[in-house]
Image 1 (tube, rainbow, N blue to C red):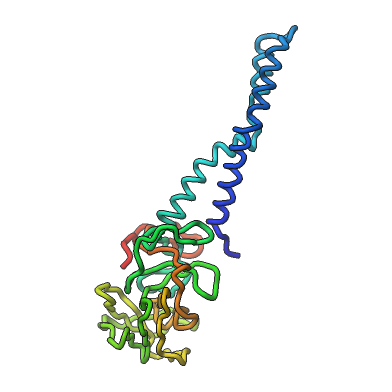
Image 2 (image 1 turned 120 degrees about the vertical axis):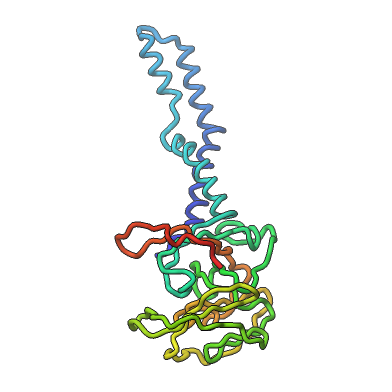
Length: 279
């Protein structure tokens, strides 16, 4: 089960903030009144230590209030950073190999394409629009969890992918063969090819499996207004817009900007050897 951490953070901030506010407006006054009543009663037969201990007990904040005041500022800062500035994201699949590997931990710029409200995703400040070649995190049309792919088509573009060649608005995208490689698939290792592709001046690597046939009958797509056509760099092992369509602008999460840590699956220590900017 996928956990919506933004929703969890919003709930925790709301609960801790509400408890803090409730204490400030009501509960704290009750504690202060109890302290004043005790002091006015001028308790007799008690030592100074006993009186001090009783006063401390009467003025002590309930444990939920104490926790709320301690955690609210921290949770609020984390919510603001995660929702409006930078959010960490783990790469769960190999659809972006060779650019991103399974186990990469990346940073996502949440304000690059506009500032959005947490959870509901409504844009409140328009900053910039995605450009071809950028790596973007988004929620796909068919599933309510984060995906990461490369922006291939902008609104109004005609995208064609046929015979393992990519065309945008009728123009063949430059792709230069680098070397033969071995590609790991669900069927085992297969011979593959590594390419250097350039989209709108953005150079990045892609990989193909020459022997892999296309499982898609459609080869051409026209990107609707306010939508973006997304593809993985692991072209023969990527579920992307070729299958489930273009991504609405409202479902954009942010721009992937850097790998900050890598951890191989299983009981392995994290590594920082793959730290890099994403292009």
